[in-house]
Structures are given as C-alpha cells and as structure tokens.
Image 1: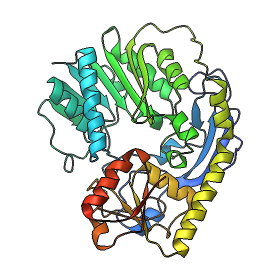
Image 2 (image 1 turned 120 degrees about the vertical axis):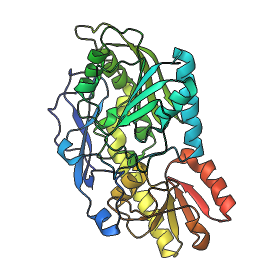
Image 3 (image 1 turned 30 degrees about the vertical axis):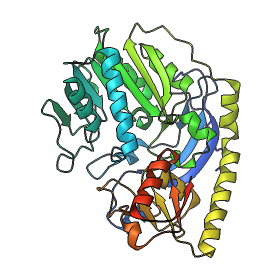
Length: 394
C-alpha cells in the first residue's frame, strides 16, 4: 500500500504533467462482477496490480499498472444495482429529470455500456423514446424484457457506432473502465458531428469521495481511471463539449456531467483542483493503511468471540474491501438482492453469495453494510426477516 515507480507517465486527460505515484496494491482481482460458480474458481481468479498515480494539474487518478488484455466483459459478468429499491428510485428520478430538462420525448437515445438495458428501457418507456444500447455483457436469456422500441447489442461500443443518430447519448459507469477516456470522448464528439442539440450524459464514481472517505473497496482493477470534478471537466471540455451541468449525486458517490457539442479549443487549460484536494490524494496511502489495520483488528476480535459475521452487497466495494484485507474466513457469506449473483462466489476471497432470506435459518451476529447509502434499506429488510443483528457500515 505504498507509492511505486509509476512517475514519468503523462496524464491521459490533460497531457500537461507527469503522474505522481501515491498508492499501490498487488494481486487484486481483475474483475469484480464475474459470477464465479465455485469457491475455488473465485479464489483462483485472474489478478492484476494497482499502481495509482495522480496528475498535479487536473487531479486525474490513473492505474499505470493496468493491462487491458486482462479485462474482458461477457455474459458471466453482472454488476447490476437496480434490484435495490433505493437505486430504482434514483434511476427513475434521473430518467425523469433528463427527459424534462432536455425534452427527450419521441427521441432517439443511445446508451454505451447499457448492461441489461434497464435504465435505457426506463428512459424510453417514460419518454416514449427509441433506444439502442451497446454492452458486451448483455445476456438476453437472463435480462428482463425490454420495451419493443429498445434494442441492446451484445457488443462493445466502438468507432463503427459513433455515427449512430441520437438526441441523447448516455454513458454511465463506463468511462472509468477505459484506459483512454479522453480518446473515447473525442470519438463520441466526432460521431455526433454537426448535431449541436445532442445531449451527452456521463456518470462516473466520484473519486474524491472515495479518497476522503477512505473507501478502499472502491479501488478496483476494472477502474483504470478515477475522476474528480476537475479532471472530469477537463476531459469533457477538451473533447469538444460544453458542460451544461456538473454535479454530485447518490450521496455524493457519483459525479455526472450533462453536455452539448461545441468547437474544440486548440489546447484548453486543465481545470485546476483545490490545494486541499491534492493534499487528500497525497495522504491517502497512509490513512488507508490505518483504516485497513483498524478493520483487520475488529474482524479478528469478532472471530475470537465466535460471532458470525456476514456482509451485505456482493459488488465492487466488497471485492475491493475483502481483498485488501485478505479476509477469507472471518466473513464467510455475502448477501445480495441480485438473484443472478446468489449461488456464486466473491472474486479473490471466495465468500458464498446468498439471498437475504438465507439469514433467517442461520442468523449472523453482525452485518457489514458495504455501502452506507443502503444502511436504512438493509436495516428494514433485516427487521422484516426477523433477524436481530448488529449493523455496521463499512
């Protein structure tokens, strides 16, 4: 968990400075969303290294140890969040806001990284729109039915697709997976061409919140790019878009941009981060080490007391958290409301993923809530199940 020698690489977003190393972790799972059918396969999953550096000019954070050949998304990948009522409410409010703000009605909508097509179907249903989605993990056999006016293609979005006519282009939680985010945004801008009214909606994890909350579980191999507001603004404006709105949402966990195409400046100056932001990045490794130690000691105390511990949420945060703590036995089950994940095993550490009602016959003493934003929803579910457990947010 120390800085390593990744200095010398230029910032992929602003290209005005060399990245400065600040955090490293070896041997993390290359995917957090693969549905491993056995514990042994989960433990033996492919691994790669985190070697994070930051740009002192725009505060972009990048994994210089990333190897794109280790990442492939297919039908065995599932990181859907819409089984949570909290997330469903967020998506519905977002869809309505985009429709109302930009009059996206009887319009053509394209979504890059559309997953099961859930959000694309929602925005097309609410606005009577036509939708085209692109996602290599799309599995028609297991996905929920889509409106007739929506089609999802089981492919990566590529240069061949950028000329697709669209009134709204959606790209949610994709840009952080791309090793050349600036290049992807430029391709999008070229594809939009001379359609000045096309709206681009981008959404990524909020890198600053992860750093300030010491959310070590948010540092995963799939995320080669980590955006703070300054670097996201720089990337979008440099690609030739005018930002209409840049905001935090979902308890500050997401950053989003709404933009329209404009002319590309010769070389726009990067948006500069505040000095305290750079200080947060520089202090992260030492503070994260203290957090890992504290959690390790807590789990050891619970194990010594023979208190059963389960985690709730078998997504990226759980994979990142348990792998950095090297937890394999102190927590033996992870609850998830996504039925497709149930019966599979967590990448790297091998915990079994179970349905919520599995806790009724084998109740835990402590439930670790991997994402604090779901604590109220999870607490109510435990009450409904009649499970009396200590709820601890991570």
